[in-house]
Image (cartoon, rainbow, N blue to C red):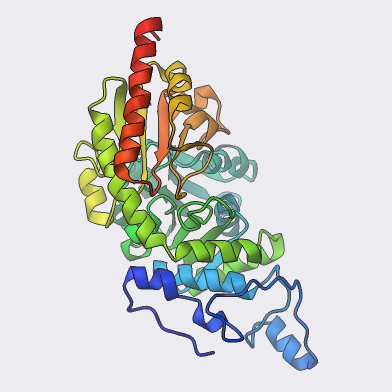
Length: 405
């Protein structure tokens, strides 16, 4: 079937149609789940041409799969990339990208506020292969600039960060990194392609945990990397040999979820803004982090590089972990779980979600309070979410008054 060009379509249309038509068979209106592990050829020469990439086709699912390719093509289109490569998880995408391009003796500059698993790669695994990692204070742009100018092979960014929702100036830092010959990589999971397209800001490679907003239904694990054909060939080769390939059933579920990505993200962002403003006024709440708030330190930067502020916010409760233990069980709308980006609202402290791999001391060093609650806003009615928060906070206040938490 002829490949459909969705490049000029608006984002909502791309989420529905991009990357699908060419993979449909037998008149189907949905991309099929192709579970075959291997693909047979009667013609040995044709088989060889497909195997070495001279001809399109499939050989073995660790390399390529039609359902997975449909997902890759949709993400490629949404991010405006030349190619996308899917992985078995977000961390597989992150670690594989780093190990693809880094060699002993290389220097990496990043920020302290990356996702906890990413932070562990920087602090534990890369030093083991003699890669020098410098983690800068996320809010100190001058420090980041200074470390980049000292020279590095790779700049790794995350914006907004998880779970503190900090913002970095992507375009400025990418330009600076390019001036010293560095590859620029960013985790765009929280922003999603709906709210931010880092390739347009000078980034080389964009990574997503597809498990989160892309899937949107908390029922499929996956990751994806997007970038130029030249760079993605290297990422693909690493995945082909190391084997962290997305399975076709997960690809199908994520594809299905992505059809409503724009609708979900817009509703989640709308609710997140109203919830953040509500929380700012609550006596039990010490701080609220959301880039859409005018009080956010880098609100103006976020406005410049994002088309929406996303569905994730976090807030700090007075009374820290003891307050969280009272507050979370009293919520009626929302799962208490280690995930984000789903249609249901999800709550969780950093010590059991984003930074479960880190010790208390490590979290404190990263500026993550024990009273911090990450809220992944779902698609429920905004009024109901606020009403639920209000009753849980009122209950917390009554308990704090009784026990002086």
